[in-house]
Length: 225
Picture 1 (cartoon, rainbow, N blue to C red):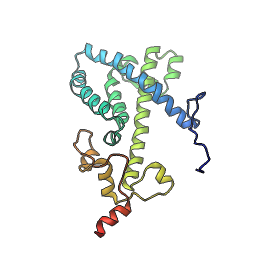
Picture 2: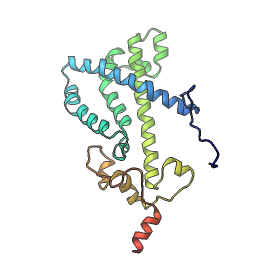
Picture 3: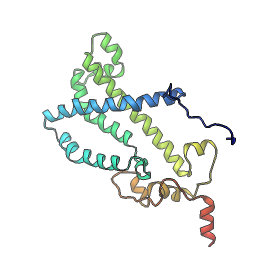
Picture 4: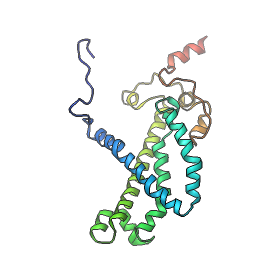
């Protein structure tokens, strides 16, 4: 950027949506989609499991919710929080949690219900699915799609960590922070990186602050001392 060139953000006061279509879609999903799904899960599904005094509900209430609330809200922007894909875990968990209710809402598990799950818009127009069943089917499709997307992103990020890069550095072919695959994983996932990959419950403290990272030249100087 030239000294006299004015810095401009990708949005302005008149249009807060990102200019790129993909970024705009993800922005809308994060702003409206995820809160809507969350309210749906809390209002409908937890009530459904409560009525049946389900063990899933009891476990969710006593163990999972307190843990996620503590971990997520206490370190929203820190490096330790960025390594856990809460959306991927949450979408998988919500899909499993609502599956019995979904099957019940679309009339049981048979070949027609599978067709309703694949094309709910056609099923509701043809009278095979109620409006409520349509909403249930769409929510399941959204959760499954989010899980697949975030799982793909997980593998992309794992490849970047392996090479000591961010997505931007990968596109620009910047290898300044590549310390070797093992040290790269320790930088991001902590000393017990092999456990942190498998579970967010694993204790794996990170030495860095998430802003300043060791470069290849720093590592070379340490080796030469």
